[in-house]
Length: 578
Ligand code: DCP
Ligand code: MG
Image 1 (tube, protein in one colour):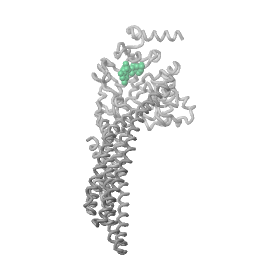
Image 2: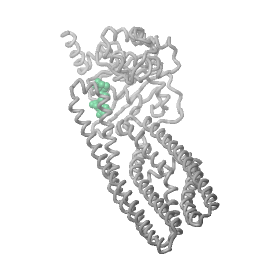
Image 3: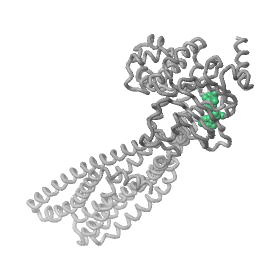
Image 4: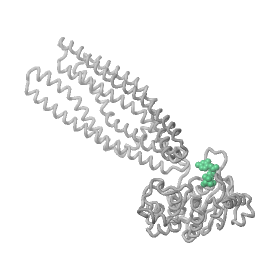
């Protein structure tokens, strides 16, 4: 069902190609059904009676019909390919759009591996089925029915031979197909699995090397590889049987026609030409049966793929963004959390518990707390990567749920805890948030982010190449580029998630000194590990286990918050020790 819906939905756009295919296939089939009977006439009426004129005339017709058949068949293939590839492209585009618009949580639930397989392999299976369908669906039934009629016209006395061989072939091939079906479903899962394993290992190759886990990971891959090989071998061994069996049936049928037909000729019941034509029709009929079976064999696999595609395309996001702006884009950038509670789906305990705070424009709000306290989650909530189960988050009084994606992106810039750069140049990465930024603006941002020197020294400067993920620059450099990227975007709210940890204390201080002039009146929220990074913040929030357990300035907190004092003391000890 999913398959039919999916194909019909996408086929509408290509109806003219599909119509052309049907007409052309019809022509080609009729032509190939006509040829054996013309052949028979040449033998029986031309050669037998020595009528050269008739041979020339009928031969000419045969030539024309054969030519027509070739043209029609070739153009049919062309239009089939146009339609099938078009449908494939549209489907892939939809999968891509859906996959990239999934909420962070949904995307994680599906997993990158299966999203990639669905967008490539699954679409291809459906596309393949459409192609095969267009090529065989018209031809096979007409060929089978037409072939039977024509064969019986040549020699009705041998009709039992047609039924017997068609029946035999259909039964044998169907049995083989029934063995194949469950294997196809398994195959798709194994493809998913090996893609997932391989992807994870390539992404984590440094960790694998660092922990000398190559052996373990190789074993994991070997296992996945082994599974897919096993399934493929089982599929292969059935396929291997398929061809000899089909050929055997064809040869038995040919032998039977010649044997029984020979007797009938000597009895004068049928002519040589008719027998030849009968044999050709029988082979055409069996060919159609094989096509039909192959088609049906592809269907289950495509059905599995279509279901998987439908599951993805039909995934209703638990988060929706308004299509058009309902409010003006926030101009000040006052971020307010009011009684926000959030837990990851499936988790028992909330990660953020009843958090309320206000981050004022022109002020720096710092968030500090132990690992896993929920600091990153707070920023992600502000960015609306997740929606809280309870409470509201507003910017300038407008709930973030009521802002469009574009408005959210314009209002806030995140410097993520694990900075990610895209393949391209330094310049193209810095312009991510504002494509029309000038080179001067990029350099200013780099100066503030303390990244000017290393970019100047790099080959190509702003045009210098960056590899996927930003692996061609050091961790600290990546962090500075990611800070500069946020600055170039000139948002109203800056969210720095532990962005200064890779900087040494002196650079950290220089950066913070330069920051206020660059962020000019914007709201700054800084998640930090080092107390020294945030001592001069206007407001510090101490987060512990998802709760805001203290708030105030550094001095106030030293007095009022035991958790804060603990953090400060632990860091002072470390500094003294050093
Ligand atoms: N968590 C989760 N699922 C996720 C992300 C996080 O269950 N996809 C949990 C793990 C933590 C809690 O949420 O216990 C808070 O995670 P945060 O990333 O918000 O923690 P921090 O940013 O405070 O930690 P760190 O200082 O290590 O960055
Ligand atoms: Mg974090």
